[in-house]
Image (tube, rainbow, N blue to C red; front, side):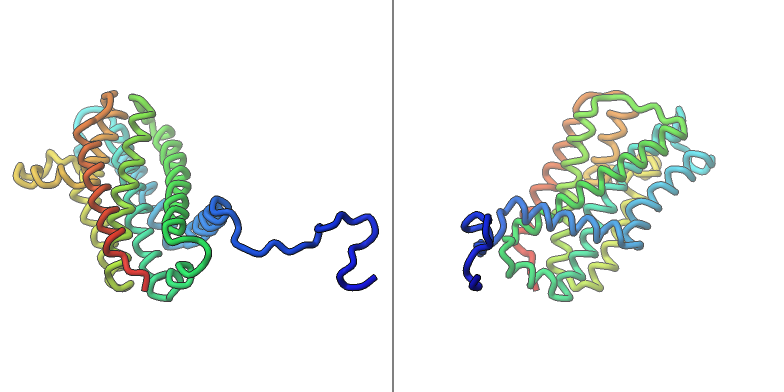
Length: 264
């Protein structure tokens, strides 16, 4: 049998090569799976996205340190910590990881692959969403164990989380695509700490001066935490004002990232 002859009983064309790129959907799924594994294997990312929110929830729910108003502390804290989880994954973690991928030339090489650049960003977004689902499941289980009694419509909660993810992803990609990696690392962590304190996550906005409240309420983290709190703690319907703020931030952040993001 020659090199080009098929083995007996083998259908013609069985070993015929099929050059070309894989289907786009398969490429995006493969890249999303890779991004998710890389994120979950990163110890620093896990500290930021899982350990810190969980510790904050447990600490301030069990130790009487903060005045969270009437009712159980966990009922106030759980929605804010869910918002913090979105911030840590969609903004801080994604900004730092993408910034260093850009510095080391990873984005440049991936941008030259058959996977289009928008497909790469889609895969990164999918990885963020998968991580957030795991975060929400873990934090919800911990909060329920601490005596949390959530209310409201799950659809409203999902809509808030999706718009919050879009807003923070846009801002994170904008930072990663315009600043140097070291500057992104410092700025993303600084913003995380500032929003943790001043975004209504663990400290009620009512504790700040009235002039500061006027500004802080329009931050995406404030809109997300307040919206989740209105639904989950008070059983409200769609928090349209908070959804509107998040939608504006999402449009501005994603639009600016699409325009100014530099791949190298």
